[in-house]
Image (cartoon, rainbow, N blue to C red; front, side, top):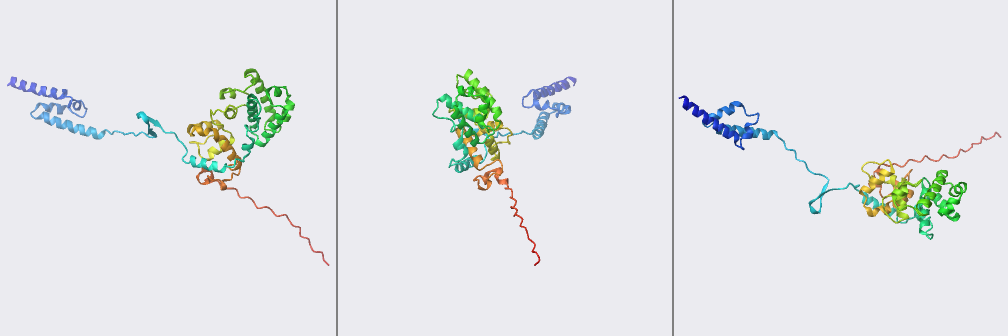
Length: 335
């Protein structure tokens, strides 16, 4: 009897080992959900089927507990070659806004159209002299109206606007020629230092890269990009002045409002098509001089009023009625 009992126990043990080594079922027996009693019950007849059924129940419970998170890719567009490319952000109505600005600027009668840096420089002079005058006109235009800059450049050209002649001119005389441009005393110093650098390091010409232009005294990124466009006929970036900075923020042309002109330039270059870089400064400057003024903008006559975030919320200030002059009431003298 003992031998028969031991033989049955060995058979039960083999069944358990077979089931546990089976890849279909072993993972369920390794689960903490399968108890020791369930394993021991496999030694009885028909227990393997019962155990498989219990294992399936464990599997169902585990499948219900496990949640598979499905993530979808966003902001991607399918391109050639089976590659995905992230779409660039752009303002939703910028094309309509730009079309309206073109319409409002079709007459080209803003001050920048007749007094820009490329217009007030001597196009008949030698190329290097013309480029030098373009650079000087932009240096003078900082925080100065175009009318004043144009008048100053006219006096400099009559005096002789070449590097050699400017270096020979004393500071007092140079100040008289450019007065009353903004910060004229400081600009006299900038012009002299820059002219000396151009003569010594660039053989009387101006640098041909934005990086080298920005190293000159009194020259910033805005001037450098405009010099590259007007003097060298190369578009390497967008020149952002106070008009471009103000108007692009009013139109909502940035993901987030920008605080500095350099941030505005980077934001515009990130989405604006490159073929529009050459015209955007000139276009917006004239628009800012005539319609989108810094103070009291003419939103009521602007074609972008309904699609401009600033124009929709802008309320023109009510002008106080003019006070009538007091009239003296003469008292009648008794007769």
